[in-house]
Length: 110
Image (cartoon, rainbow, N blue to C red; front, side, top):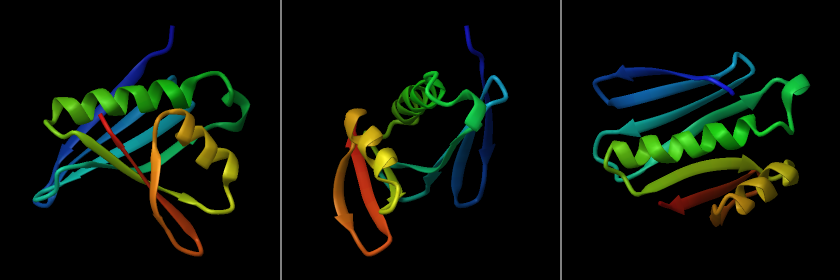
């Protein structure tokens, strides 16, 4: 069974929660004052531990945290040349709402 450690920081502009899963995966979600969404600003899994469900567990926990903070939407960005990552987020229920030459902007209502 994996363990997720959470580090919650409060700032003048809002707050941030860093999640660490078994030392092999990390994810950060931020909440800025005056917004109605949580923003995933980073998700990484060590290459030796990929395709084992760590990223999915982290994102499921992010969704729970966003709900706990009283928000109902998650936003994130994916580089356009990382199609595998984009497709993975689509499988998790995220939708693209905008794009430019470098990024897909995605969101999910929870």
